[in-house]
Amino acid sequence: MIAKTIAGLKVGDAHPVRVMGVINLSSESFYKGSVVLPDSVLDAAQKMINEGADFIDVGARSTWPLAHKISKEEERSRLIPAIKELQDITVPISVDTMFSDIAGEALEAGAEIINDVSGLTADPGMIEVAKNHNCPVILMASNKVPGDPVGMDAVMDSLVRIISEAESDGIGPDNIIIDPAIGKWTLEKLPMYDYETIDTIQRLRIFEKPILAAISRKSFIGETLNKPANERLYGSLAATAIAVRNGAHIIRTHDVAPTVDAVRVAERVRARVPAVKSGSYEAELLEIINRDDCARAMRSIGATGAGSLVMKNKTVLYNIMLKNITATEALIIKQEMLARGGDAALPREAVSHEIDKVNIVITGTRLQIERLINKIKHQVRELPLIAEMLNELINKKNDAVFGYSR
Image 1 (cartoon, rainbow, N blue to C red):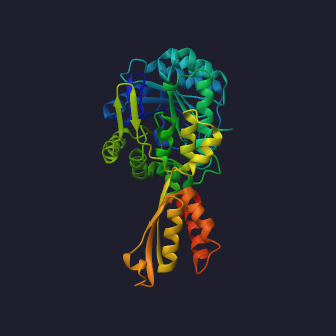
Image 2: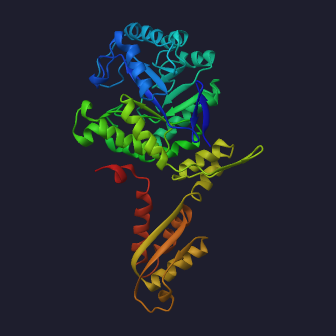
Image 3: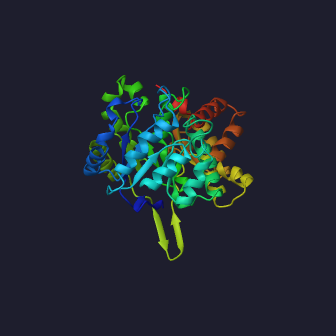
């Protein structure tokens, strides 16, 4: 069960999905409609709070790859006065910066959270600032540059490293929020990878950290709808609702009021995570959809890397329907699955060969299915063809290009 206290707010599975309103001080932003003028900062923040924002995130440097680059001093001159202007508002302030000295000044001026899109990789001093202030940090999946992991597997690998290094360097585990880097941070980040992330965002649960999704008006929505940033609200709300339904705990947005409505409905669709606690004992049902994630979960409890690799193919169950195969082929497949600890369901008439063609449902782990494939690919009839089909089927299961390219 994911449950943390972030700057005084309860965040996690048993709490409402939190909404983070964006105060954008960067005139270089891809979405000009989001830019807040210096003399309107307090009014903009108060409006967002009235609309239901739980956090206010303040940034002064556009991270849009095509944006004009500004100096650190320009970022500081925009950011610090705005933080001071907001220091008495009633919700926590997050400072969006990759520079440790600016983050430190912002925290002294009233900010309570650091939002570092580089995942603590751009400025080594950021770790010390976060430690000294004992403040929450939002860490985005990044390797060499912000947001560069391509595909959810790469996002997972990046966050494994970032979280491990942050905790080893002294940042408290309860102070970390994770961000899977939705958006076109690099040229290689095609829309299908953002759709994969939103669809499989529940994979991030194995880290046991609050999950932040920053979706608002991003380019994958524009490329899908062929619309500019100022016409992407409805697309943003659709993607946001799916992210919430799939497990996001915090939504970062330019459009607080409509996003709050979308979030409140979407979180009611999301079923509660089955968990039980009695005294010091706890039990939680892990809904693992990717075998590598189960290996990561095993390593997180101290299992060996070798043991985790052996176990992972035993952790995800596949239910496969084969149609229009012969009764003989169906019986062979059932026998082979039973021999490997799996099973298969087939019509009663197949046993007595009263019908020529049948449908069959195979149930087994990845390991059991792979062993079935290896066994039948050299057998008689059309079993080698069936083996090829099963192999293609399970390989498509986690293929982002197959699943999300259109």
